[in-house]
Image 1 (tube, rainbow, N blue to C red):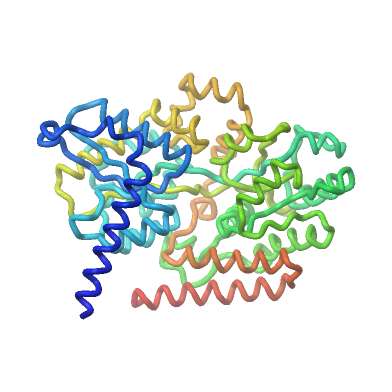
Image 2 (image 1 turned 90 degrees about the vertical axis):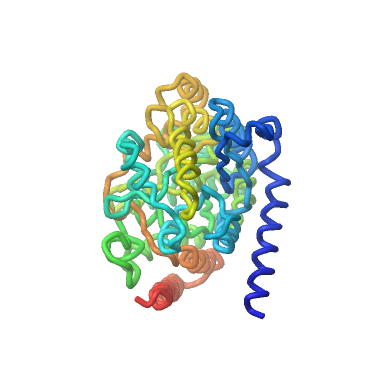
Length: 450
């Protein structure tokens, strides 16, 4: 009975996957499909991704251009929903013929993918091909390197920045070209904004675990012990009480001052509030920069992520996703997928990807392409996002944490942040978050028999 249930479950997942694909990323690629004759001499590569909206359009164009650039490989890009949804589908079909050749997975899924035993580390292809990963952006590739070994290829990468309303700054008597750098300066600017315009709040922070991780790293704090899980498997959190509470107290003070805008976990409402002039500053992914600048009726400023005044700015951890090679495929299929991965890293392709989506160029040579120079001339704010990444100091804190329980950990932190947003106590919220985070780490280790 269990075998029958598992078989039926697998069939449903595969059927849903096919339906999802037909309704999304296959659109716009019909003309790129090989004929039945061509298909006999072409190696097909199935690529599962989670890019929606404008990013999906850009990705479809890149895939189409690759397919037209040669006549030996045909990449079929299939949208699989969110990263979580895609990973669930992958786990259901991994090891079978229904598994994709390549799958895009978010950065905090790195350890889960490694532990799955269903992937081929790209280091094997790098070594066989003599491919030079040092030509790519070090502050991006360092996240995906573990013990000197690459398991996946970086693809869509971003970091958080602070967006601010320059017009509101001017109205409040603040220098629009000198945005706040520290937690304390953000709080003071928020007061000035509200005093000049009582209808506008000063600052908003989405209750999002990724932003918490970034605010920790920017002050040199670790998310997990054992050097963020890069030396040994973590056994508990890595941040101190002072470091964790610094973020909660920062927000709590603005909540008490009436300068904080509470949008909870809802990013869309927060961005809409910023564009409507309801709040003057907020933190969010650099990949949103193009959309925010284009849709604002005021001048948008972009600044580095803030940090506590008693700390030295360390920088940011790369976010986004990477591409994984599935195990169990033929050598020919994996080599074809590798050619596609390398194509994605070329300066021309990365330049187009950066300009059209706001994601970083994995290959920094892309920033010398004319298309990027023209875009930066029109939107100089875009260069700030790149400068912040390249100004990041190398450390275990900014390299980022690795563990398979991180998605659960983010939800724990989001609950703690929302507690503060709604008037909760900092000590209690922090203590509860630490206890739950440590319990999640312990449970994950026990599940692996560690």
